[in-house]
Length: 345
Image (cartoon, rainbow, N blue to C red; front, top):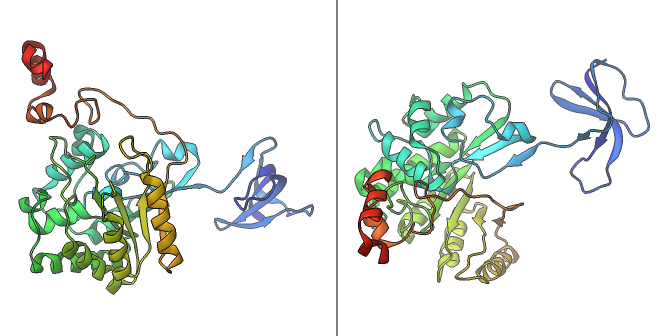
């Protein structure tokens, strides 16, 4: 007798084949039988799924549950919608490794890049770790309803090794710092990190408007970290980039050094509407040469909240708005209200 049998479900198995009505038997958390006109046997628990879909769970490879995963076993709302695995640490932002006392900066960066409120993160996260392997231990000790995977974020790694210098994208690490970052990355991958992520887009900024630390990382830094991935022999290199002139070539070179898969975010932008086509051609060329390169694309339209208190709004990159980045929302509003010249500019 099986532990669980789901009866008369409309099965879509993810292979691209036609949907069909079938019974599915489960034992020890694994699918043991799918009926194809034959009886699968009885179950200690049976579910009547007539008229309902039975599908594989969704694997969401691009999330930002880095903080929430430490306190929320349900990882809502993803678990409400059929997601059974999430991957975070994307876009170079996350919360490990972290020097004691530097937690506010990482929270500020996460709020700026992903619009997750500082109050939620500061109150919700109990920083019981310093190293990335310790962070994985905390994640592993938290019961949850779905599987998770974490990647090493470049910004956190850089800030951990370089301190305040690392927060400035124009500051380059010295050879010792690159070696230190590489050693930490190698150890994190050995401990179970799924990969390493970096951000090279001007759209990613701290809450107060500063570009993300990894934005200006030079080839010496990128290639040093790629060497660490080669030594580890595991992990994916994930990049979010604006793909300016020569950028894909730099990333391809890093992937060749690492000997690891490269995953790049691919979006269409108004000021370069055909850039995505060029990038896809470059991805195809790299794959033809034997590299494993994948372009991440959204499977549906993405909603975005815009407002003067949010990260994204019409004035986000305006120099005068950036000058007011240190002011509170109320103070910025008062400046705009009381200064006609400022509004005209």
